Length: 213
Image 1 (tube, rainbow, N blue to C red):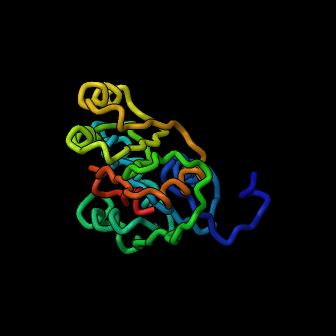
Image 2: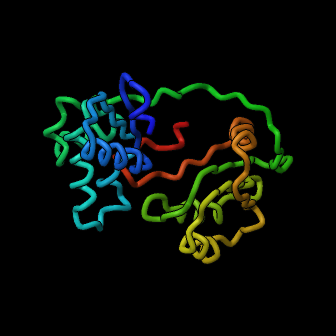
């Protein structure tokens, strides 16, 4: 409805989620859509580590986006990977684009979760798939660090496998504090005032690590 009512200079779709690209691709195939289309891949889709077991249909779909879009923006990691994959034929219209939201954050501590007298270590993120981010090494390390340290894990998603790994591995549970879905402003304040920020390595080499933010 918007495309039929408004004369846009250009349209930008983003990934993730891929639905943004999928919808524009569908619209372009079914209409006389001539507005310049910029497809911005902030995350991989067909080559995402969690999609490696698919039968190639996702790759065909993503190739159609590369083919139909007028311009492709990707992260530096994706651009590097695209030199030698199915998207290399479209490099002539693909441009690496750095994230534009890098900035220093200085937020007040709205929720003081820290333990006085301890070295407070904080992880903020998700643990929804050990295939992408595996905390087992962190769990093992907790057992070998003395009681001067407190570990605060703020997690909005955790898989059952990761829950089991925590119960099986961590013995010094008195030093670990879990929090679920704290508000963003609270998380930013906690991250700003923590003694140590924990980064769990992302196995997906074609994604910009989230903890750079």
